[in-house]
Length: 367
Image 1 (cartoon, rainbow, N blue to C red):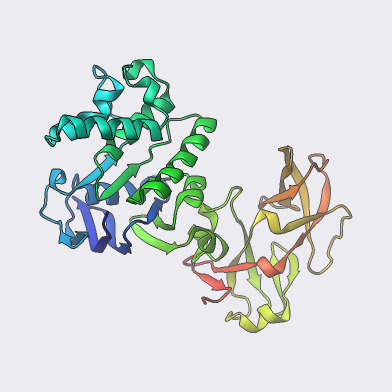
Image 2: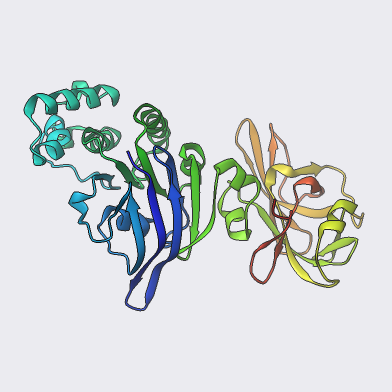
């Protein structure tokens, strides 16, 4: 096990900067997740740590070693890829043992490690099978087992669950978390799936366009996003973003007024008539059956789509006479009809204000 330090890592491909000035430190034994949209640079960071890519500039440390010029095979890391990369002609036992055999580990040790790993991953009854005889989830567990058996300093996973169906992905995600709690190996996990990021990570690194947007505890990042990109990326349904004009004691949202409580007024550093974006998560909006057209603090909307999910209902509405969409999440079953006009009550204790020019958070203030 080892800490990992990235110090101003940059990776360029001709005229494209894939990652730019990436700096963070992962303490020994922690589970960190790199998350962001496709093309944000998360896999490039992982491959650079593994030694499969070479940083254009910056320094990379694994443990106390500067590994910039150390080849991948000598970095003592194990990587699990999205496509499993199993040897089709080898059995499960032989696939798990392969990395140990390449390192000339003695046979009794290989057998002990393979059997231990197989038991922890519920693979002991499959050791004589070939990959083609396994399900997708079983193949993924074999790939994980091969990496774990090596007992590396560092465990790297590049979207390892993306090829699994929803139920199997949930089950394997839980197994991964239990394995990390048991083994304590420093782990870096790449995904675009926010659920995986939120449930697995000790810390998440949110990336966009090759740059770090925010690093922190998953719940803290969700509750206090640094900017509009982070706010809308984490959360399903995503945070609602409403274009607004600051009017001093209220916001003008497409011609409708939303009053501003005094505590928010005092904290806002906005000029009258300044454009901004308001953010509020779907779970902090209440549906009011009675339509209150023009009442200060109430937004008039028209129902577009209703999605009952059993214990909760997702409702997609539009601001009246506009194309601005608002997602609302309420508990239980709510019976509404498309085209129905009603009002929304926003819980302003959970309101965010973002700069419309750069997306930075204006309110709440950083703490």
